[in-house]
Length: 149
Image (cartoon, rainbow, N blue to C red):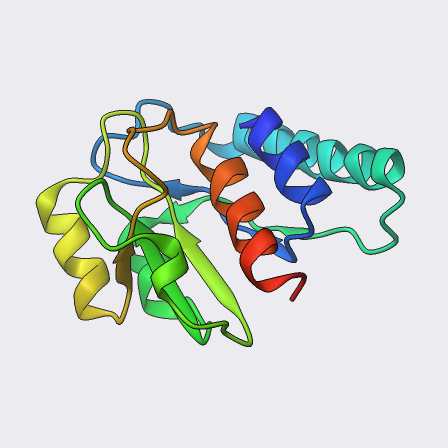
């Protein structure tokens, strides 16, 4: 997660929300969760210093997938899925949210839940990427296609 936060910060995201899904293997609680959140925020600060970025992205505490899907706000909401239209098939949005699943992917029910909340499926290419690689590729492709938001 550290690497994904670091690279997402370098690529210009404004917010990151870790999610708990059915296949999520690690679920920290209480003090350990608070320490991890502070650590992630420090990772984002360090990434901003490294890349010359003046605005630190908001790192939200982890939430359940269903709760995040309900509150996600963006002109274009995308769920990465290996069987979907390529990312470049979408027009430039004013704002963008990506839903990226855990190792093993989202369950069919979670994908359906995202679709019912307005998320559109998108793929990044012919390969299934690791969870830590997918956000970096998705953000780099989006930035190449549409520039900064």
